[in-house]
Each structure stands twice: as structure tokens, then as C-alpha cells.
Length: 158
Image (cartoon, rainbow, N blue to C red; front, side):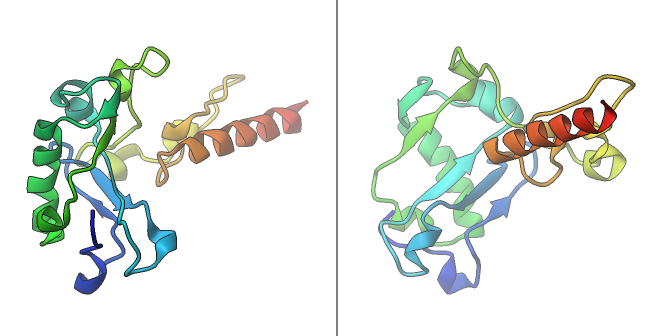
């Protein structure tokens, strides 16, 4: 993107939608400041959209159809984003990558209040780690932190 559209609207670039939408997006160029560029808006689709709705290869330039689908939705949240789009987009389609075969977790409507936070609860001698065990941070960093948490749990039981 040539410019960031969200600061002038009073936003930080982070947005989330329902499971049928793009799901989550954030400012990947936050270190450049509100007026810094080029702007980088990261989109992480999940669920069915990530599994079957993307049209690109596992890794490479994002197809126009995928970019258009995202822009049509984000435009409603951050007006002007389509006009600021510079034509450059890259796609990591995790569902097609032989080392991933999936995406990150994302709660369906009602699940956050129904059971979010229980994913990390130990069951007997079985411990659970992974990005899905961190309620608010479905990232690689959360996966690493959960591994450290489980290691500490086990060490505390020895």
C-alpha cells in the first residue's frame, strides 16, 4: 500500500471480523509510524476461507481474486484502502503447505464465552501446547510461549 488509511480514521490497523469474513488484519509496518510507508496490511484468513476460499499457491504472489475479496471487506472497515493499494500482495496459503496443512485457531460466534481458555488445561498427565492454547494471541510466538509454559508445568510436577 502506498499509505496507511487507518491512522487518519483513528485506528491502529487491527481489525477482526466474523468467521465468514477475512477474520483478522493488522498493521505489519507499525514500526514506520502512522505516516510511514510503504504500508503493510497483513490479512490472516481462517476457517473455511483459509482452507478452501483462497485461490493461490502455498507461497507466492497473491492472485487478484484473493486480493479483491480482502479489499472489498477491509474497505468497509478502513475506507480508502482499495485506492491506496499499490498492486503488491503476497500469499502464504498454509492449508496447501506440506509442513503446515492448516491455519491458526479462530473462535466461532459464541465459543469465546463458552470455552475459551480451557484449551490449555492439563488432563491428567497430558499437557496441551500450541497457538490455540493462547486465547488472545494465535501466533507463532504464542505457540513458543505455550511450549515454555508446558515445560514449566512438567518441571513443576517432577
